[in-house]
Image (cartoon, rainbow, N blue to C red; front, side):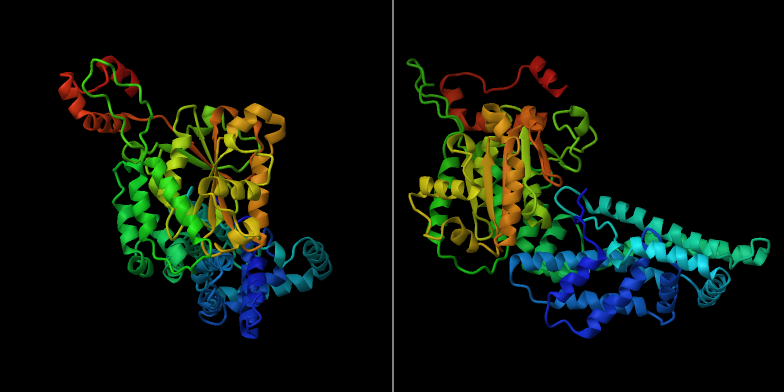
Length: 562
């Protein structure tokens, strides 16, 4: 489950105040929202609850305040990629709060609010000293900075349905707290049948708020997606409807993603079609000649036969078997995916993966990952058994992602000195592949040209580092995470994908929040697809040598299916 880490209500205010043009009316509106956000705090203090009741006195005030702040954030024109991501974070976090505010606005009738305020003031006069002491103690341990809603984010791991379930739990907890406060203030006489019925009716109304809040969240989510192109295409991938902006600007990309359903994307060709159809308006870069050379090399590498065996032809055969090109024969693996949330998780333990669903849409996953807000914050770790196709996947990815939208640097770790910094590895690999050196500004000058479209660095074969020097490289993934954070702080975000055998990964220290993708063995459908490609590629050979095309023996097929 992806959470915007440690994102408090106060962080939205910090984002607002970064803008020197923010008006006093926006700050004042946010201050009032902070008063309402007390319902998200672990403990609701009496005076704060009174302020909240006052806010409800003016019809639609909470709604208007929330949308005033949201509109200010959404209307800002952030050209820088990192600033735009922070803008989306702030806007998204806000709607997680305002969704509940919008439905809470009219939940407590005016007469009940009046009785609540009167009752609290009476209790405060009766127990003034003890209440003030309790409030003083509580206030010292809780401030507005502590008000938070766990802001669960739809991402490449988590579905919108799961997010709504988590938010529903939070909203239910808030509703339960509100009912408890009202009950504890004893404004309803439980011995009076009319009062008892009134309390039950009010409780029923408040109990229904979470479901209504989720509907408000969905509506505001769609508004957010319609405003931001980055978020819009990602939302379309999550099967949301009603996003006009995404449909208009990325119609071809969306249609290509939809068309992947129940199809095997051989050679990840459809992934390449998707990334090339994504609307871009990026600035030209000085290093375009280097990028062009990288693309040529990567594309050429997948035009090679999937196995290079020049000695396979025998002396008595008129023609030999032909191995298909990588791009024509690569079958994307099925996979399982999770977010690494605890240090005690043992990824080699099969039971960890048992409840994780199997997915068959690797091309769609990578588009979702690249559009996820957290792809620039944490590494994507691809695990698999020996021979599961990890390296081949990275080779195909490198070629098929190269486009106006994405630039990839693939580094086989077995071929480099991994003790060097990642920036040095990138520089050396570019020179090795293209025979071109980066400018005197090195990696930093090169990466700065991609501020609006972060580089993708693929590190293939981490397990070989663990095998050779496990004690030295056990912290390599943390090094990657630190590199990502350092680059982000300098305004040149980067995405990093790294592969490893699953049988060695528990020796490594994995950064919390990393995405873990585990490649699976071929299923019967994938095996048959490969066999069909093989047979089609060698139809002339079989005919010439008067032999049957390849198929699995029945007993082997049954064993595989089991």
